[in-house]
Length: 360
Image 1: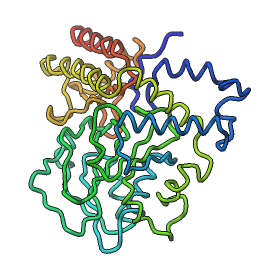
Image 2: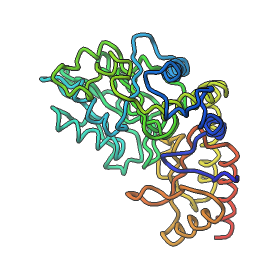
Image 3: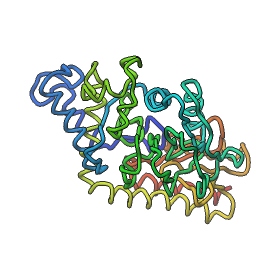
Image 4: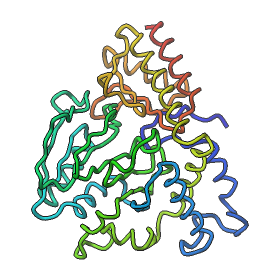
């Protein structure tokens, strides 16, 4: 079968090796006579999957022992609510740095829970630049600072993670987790929907510093309390077993590549290829993001007019490229080049961009 040239923003491409492995085990996982989605989540076979997924994530991200790894549901959008419900205590303020639509939504949810304030925003500049937080001084009553590390719609990414002394940093890493090396100890809480770099939609990963779990109050709804999932090792109710199994396979694939050092090298190579094509086009293609804020995961660009853009997207589809439309809120074009997008697919896209430019 010919694989699509998949540049979807999410759900996104999965490694071919992962899909092939899952296909082999779909009907009969380890001679159980059942597929993974048929296994009891209390069974030994599933327990091994669950534990392996956690241990691989800990190893790849170098997660310290004083952090819990939780497998949750509801996507990052539910975390917009769970974070303030669990961490925003009475008398304190949650600070949000707005770099796009998803951070706006996270902030809006926090205002429903307690006191939330905007520490900085890039909205006035059409979210082309990540705000410079140098010299920003936050109130001593700050409960946490929230950032979105990569912005899929606008194609920007934090290059230098801000530091706020003793204030916990909370990060939505849905679209760039596992794409580059990070220092987990810089963060109080990291959360990420899996459907970009970790696996299929249906499971959300949260990495929570254990001391912050004491903020989760007993009067919270049980399923919205981080301590519930910490105490039960994410097995309080039936977890998304198939999604966690596929996450485990993706993590095994990432490990086989050489871990984050190699993944980051390849991702930088892929993004540079497209940005070089944009920058050398003489203005035919125009990048949305400021060069100092460019994302390695989502390359956003425009052409001179809507007719030319429509022609580009139409011809791209005819040539097998999927998912190059920009987000409906901003238009233009977007190439999402997550970990599982092969380098040769990016090279084919760049070749197409050059041919299209020469013809137009």
